[in-house]
Image 1 (cartoon, rainbow, N blue to C red):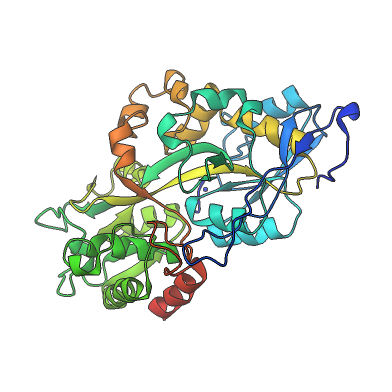
Image 2: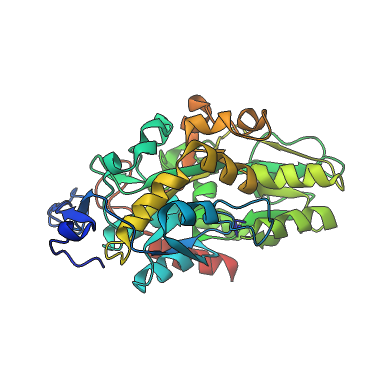
Length: 399
């Protein structure tokens, strides 16, 4: 479950292998407002027989083969259908996933939005020919062609699942019920030491989102597009919050344990965490979308630029996006499925309602994780701070 749980470009069509065609942008980086150039990486034009193997980097819970629960297995059916043996490597964080993809040993990755653009602009993944993924047609439209999974209207992956970063609290400990993110940022909070926050540089965006209202003079319109002044304000807020935080979490199972043990009483959560705690009936919790809104994540299956088993990877992307499989993954992991037909296959018939799976308005209100780049995502030009800078600042926040 998310801790949150080469191809050589030769004419191999005659051997039933993947045929590739050139694709990729070539913008000039010399202009002040020019977007960074996207490396030219070939895109598939057809899919042939599987190569017999598939090497994946994925969040835990995304490639289940019955090991954790014998009733939860969508890997073996895939292997039987395609002949592609799946080798799964768990990536515990987005940073770890990027590092693993740089090794060149993997065919694909289930990347979150704080990793996707790093992979694209690093030339580590290829554009995806969605016509070769039949189940892409019924993926929710509001997840297609978004800033975290596409560049210049070209998709770089297949949407998998999504969710929001909610505000949760122990209703026996926290009173009155909070309605704003100020509950986790107020320096005078009576819950000092019981506040929890997500452990990643991308959490800087949560602080930026909160600052939009109390400091309108900062003119933040996109929490992932921060110029130096805006970034400094967000970091200042996070450094002040550090005194309140008892525990940062990246593994959501540990977030569950922290609330159930009483170590945490208030902070950032995912719907799956709230559901697990509620199911355990150890402590009463409530989770909401605060008045300022929320950040969130939308995961994308991406194919390596030099995948050794590209046909198997395309087959996997179609398999994982199929209605029944996407429903299985979503329920096991605890997220909204990307496939709109998946809701017909969930064991819990209320599942998609709980996770707002078909709620476009709910999804559109989420500021999804998107890799910060120097070319501002809000269109202001090359004046913003990139993920490397965010990483440095997050290290300073944590101390």
